[in-house]
Length: 250
Image (cartoon, rainbow, N blue to C red; front, top):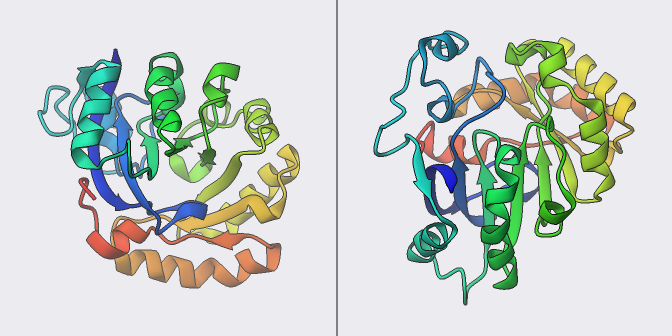
């Protein structure tokens, strides 16, 4: 059974190299990290201890009917996606996010295999701490890898797994996206170290402003864009935030 938080769409991919493209989202429940700024904390901050790790300190209800945990079989997920969009005859991008999708590779495999057989692209959003299995990799079109920096609040040994990042890069399917805060100079210096350590080509690196409202996204981007371009990095806005602010259903 898959641990699901939300299935929604059609919408646009908000982040990374596929930003602006038509897609559906499969948002999974549970994560192995605890980012202070996480905008989907409802997928994991369901205890007082975990809630305390977030900026808001809000504890979410694990049984919330909208965003809480739902156990679903492969057929149920496929049926639900087809109700959102005819993924069998009108293929699109299926973005699998979370939470952390790599925690559920075995359960995801039959769903993703069927979606690929129907002609859909499968994009996996991951923090890059868990490597893909060979079977899982065979049904993935693209990995959107977002290694967490010190600004996430996670300890280094938990958030930074260079061997995993190297394995994802070796698939030839990975783009790397880093969240940049107001302290953009320190953040970009950390990105530089990771990119050099893992030997990621700068043409596969994008930086993205943190923030759940459009104005903050634009302001942070304006502050750091020149330094990013000098390095050869691309810039990703959070398109869905510019359009819909922090609406969790878009």
